[in-house]
Each structure stands twice: as C-alpha cells, then as structure tokens.
Image (cartoon, rainbow, N blue to C red; front, side):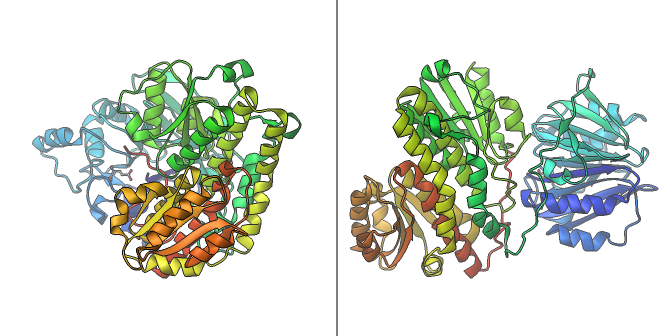
Length: 607
Ligand code: GLU
C-alpha cells in the first residue's frame, strides 16, 4: 500500500526519489521519507504529503544512491518516528518496507534482550536491527540472514552507509520492479514510477533478493540459488499524466470514461460473428462449452463489478455464476470443482486478499484468470492468463474509470462465453453493437449530467443515506454508496430495493435521503413501488432513471435521467456515472480530500 522507490546512479538521487514518491503518493500517504548515502546516511522524514518532505530535503547534500517511501500505517500511529526509512542503532543501515512483518513482536523481544533500543512503534524497525546483527561486510548475506527469520509479507529496499554504490531489495508478497536506465538503475513498488526513466523492467518474484548497482543487478533466491529474469518492455500506457485542466484526478478520471471504455472494448467485440475475443482468456470453444460454473472474486469496487459480471455470465451464457468478496472466499475452504473457471478482479492487480484467493484456487487444482488494470502486476503474473481492462492509470483512490472498464471487460467475456453456448448470431450482434455504442452514451451523459449539485446537497446534508436498486442496479447502488463513503465520509447503506421493508425502512424518517437506481428494465415497476414506500415515510428521493421516464422523474425530489440502454446488463455503465459525480460534488461541498481520502490507500496490499 505504501510506495517504495530507489535509485543507484550518477545523478542526484533526491529529486528522482521525490518524483517517484509523488507518483506513488496515491497508494498510501500518511508520511514520507528518504535516505541518501553520501559520507554516511542522510535521513529525512515528514508526516503528511510528499510536498512536506520535498520542502525539508531541499537543503540535503546530493548523493547518487537512495531509497524513499510513502507510508500507509499498519503498525504504529502516523508520526515522524514511525515514518520510513528506519535505521539500525548505528545509523549505517536504512530500510523501507511495504506490508507487515507478522512475527515482529518475537523478533523485537529477542533484540531488546540484546540491548537494542527501538525508536518507533512499527513492525518494520526490526528489519534494520536484524540486518545489522547479521552484517559482517556482505550486505546481501546480511539481508538474507535477516529475512530467513522473518514471517510475513514485505517489499523492502535497504541502503548501507558502507556500500555507497549499491542497494539491496527483496520481496515476499509485495511488488517490486527494477528499471534499467543509461548507467543507472531504478527501483519501485509500481512500474508507474519508472515511466519516462526506464524502458526495460524486471519484476522481482517472491522470496528473491537483488543486489542493485548502477550498471547491473544480481538476483538470488532466499535459499541462495542464483537466478535471472528476462527484461520486459514497460507498457506504453504507463505514461505519467497529471490532472490536466481538472481540479482533481477523480473528476478527470470520471471524464476519461468514454476513452477508457473505448480502449477496453476496442478490437474485442467481433460484430460479424456476434461474439467477442479476449486475447488473454485463450480458451477454445470446446472448453468454454464445458465450464460448469464461474466464480468472480474481488474486493470493494472490484467486487461490485464482479456482481455485474456474474449476472452477465448467467444471463448471456447461462453458466451458473457467483461473485464473492475475496477475503471471505480465501478463508472458508471453498469447494473448487474442476469444471469451474474463476476470475480474479482487481484494479491494482496487487490486492492481497484477491491474491490469496487466487492461490487458494490454484492450490486446489482450479483454473483462475485475472481481470486487472495494472499491466505486469502480481495478479496478472500469478494467473498467467487474463484480461487487461485498459482503463489507463487510475490515480484517485476512489475508483471510477476502472469500475466501468471492469464491467465492460466482464460483459465482453459474457458475450464471448454466451455466443459459444446459447446466443444466436443476431442476439450476439445486437448485444455487441450496443456495447460498442456505450462510450458515446457515456460521453453524451457527461456533457449534460443533470441535477448533480442538487443531489449532492441533499446527500451531504443527511445523517445517513440509503442507496437501493435491483439486479445489476443493486450492484450499482452498492458502488454509489461506497463512493459517497470514500470521498465524502457520509454514512450510507445499500440494499436490494425489496429488502428495505424487511428492516432498514425503520430508519427512514422525514428528510432521509434515498438514492434509487431505476433504469427502464423489467424490474422498474417493482423498484418504483419500493420508492413509493420510502417516500410515504418522508424520505427525500433522488432517482437515477432512463431519460424519457416521466413517471419516475415526477416521483423524485431530484431526478437524474441517463441514456437508455436496451440490455439491462449494460445499464450499470451509465447509471453509475451520476453516482460517481454526486460523491465527487458532495466531497467538494464537505471540503474533503477528494483524491486521497483519509485512512484509505489505492492498492490494498495487506490482508
Ligand atoms: N507495516 C509498516 C508500517 O506500519 C509498513 C506499512 C506500509 O506498507 O506502508 O510502517
């Protein structure tokens, strides 16, 4: 969840480290720090955004080797002594660490008995002390000996005052990538930080240690076996882009959806066959015909996209399908039948719980493929097969364009499986044609989004807010509620519309804001009855409905029409748009930190 960067070369390390940290800031950002080797170790750490750190390091001496970190606290409060890098007691070894050392308490007790005084509350601080304990002149062997005692997950980078021209890095369950420049080497926890500096990259695997110099690197496994990895080209879509003319990344990313959806759909819908082609899901029709079940696994927004994906698999392909929160699935000893296909859905491709679920499926002999945004991420590589959703880098913590691209990619998969199993040519063609038309609908909606501010005022003034819908619109309601929690910190709940009367309706009183997602599909009339039920009890209603639905519009205090989609499976791609905008505007009205909401991180690499 944190960001790690490292640099070995002849240029000044500090500006390069700061630039890398700024790009990774979205991943975790309660504090940041750098350590640079130049006649000893120079350490600077600050609480708050990277900008605070940048002010503090401006006067630091130049150096060509350094490490940096943005922290998302797991152990210990947000305070400067807990910020990374952490030093050993002689201040000659500096460590940055992502994730959690699970047996830190036992190691700490051992080191304290040996007289070591700890200066932070973090799990991480055991690492520099442990490395120091084993250090006899060889930095790689010291790190290896320390890591052999460690349980848990880590991506680490280590700088030694005694070895000004090298860095050591190691990973277990937390990503690290190396980039090759001209006579310089970059290290990062996310390839995004390498864009513009390195064309060729190398991903470190679990339980590997690497010795990094300006010219080369040398990888060994924890057990000492030397290995090599091929260099890979850095994906061209990883071009670093700022906010452009938008006030926030979130708003920019909402408005990028016509383009990101076009990218996701491009070349994948095959209209003349009424089907689809997803290069990464390279299953021959005979295998698709034999799939007995599809399980979609994800967390947060990716779980909501998975719910739509499951509906697509059942409705388009008549394959029994379910979506489940990955953290629950992985620990419940699930039944993995051999005919099943699992799809692991994740924006970052690093989500620890989703990775755990993948390993559970693989351990039980099942088939799992990734549906991810980040090219080269751990999930993409662990699955080996899968689909990139191609939404482009998403920086705002609250996901918007990645959600719509995940839904679109899963609808394409539904079409591909459906055409093999039950869909005729014309049915497939009309679904495919409608899907290809979605980017234009999204563009049209975003050009004239309707009464977003009126809706945002209503929800931001509420004690709590209800969201409801049915079928795929329930998944959209869940996603809308999540956005409002994340970006505006407004307490809200989401329910399948008919569930309201089974309990939650007790909470409705005069002026409770309710957001109903009611596209013109087979469930419209029933959902509008549920709207009447809460309206009768005084709720203030916001309805997202199909344009031209005058009855729904008249029922609402705030009516937000969206373009018509003929297939209800496609409707989430338009009904979610006003909910994204409402959350954004409510966040602005309540003066929230839109792109970096409190307590959250973009890529959740801890369990
Ligand atoms: N567990 C470490 C800490 O709390 C690392 C957290 C992170 O991944 O940023 O400092």
